[in-house]
Picture 1 (tube, chains in turn purple, red):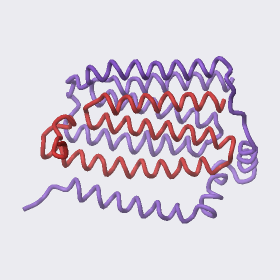
Picture 2 (cartoon, each protein chain N blue to C red):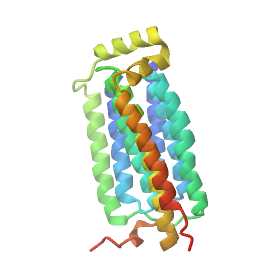
Picture 3 (cartoon, one colour):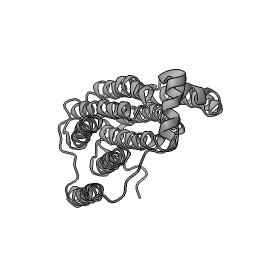
Length: 172
Length: 97
């Protein structure tokens, strides 16, 4: 059952990714990206990463994609339907990409070894049982990884200041 | 399940790279970079089923960095658009020699 669901989400994610690459207008590209992100959140749920699935929807599909949409609307690029795909490079690269994917799929479905669940899966399930879905990730985040977590705050502050300085109109 | 997730992740990463190399619209190139970041996130989550919760914590950090990168990158695109009136990267040749 989970495997069937996983394949459904994978199909939507790959279709959405193709849409992102091939859509003519930036808005269409963006909406395909939202579909990809939502189905990736579904795969996160199937891999027992419920908190990450939630912030994938809230932060990625909700906030970052709306930021992109704001910029597209601000610069009035919604009608930008000009063909911007490079011809020659497109032909060569699409052969490479299709070949890579075919190789990957062939390797996967010819039963060439696989990755099995290790002790990590058991540990995560136990942590979810003990601390809950959010607690399982919050416990190590606020103890072992508290310094990187605080540095993340500084990074976001620098990004906010940098974005304002870069996008601000120069007033003479 | 983990193998399938890794295959999906590889396919999404390749598609993202393809988009960055092929498209000339700066915003769509950014979206393709986000696609690559998401593909890597998926492999981190898949490997967290083998190794432990650290993979999921790293995905959290990747998402934060992606948010910061999107904010700064879009600000750069806005200031470039003010100057050139376009977001097609073929027109940005200041650093080209």
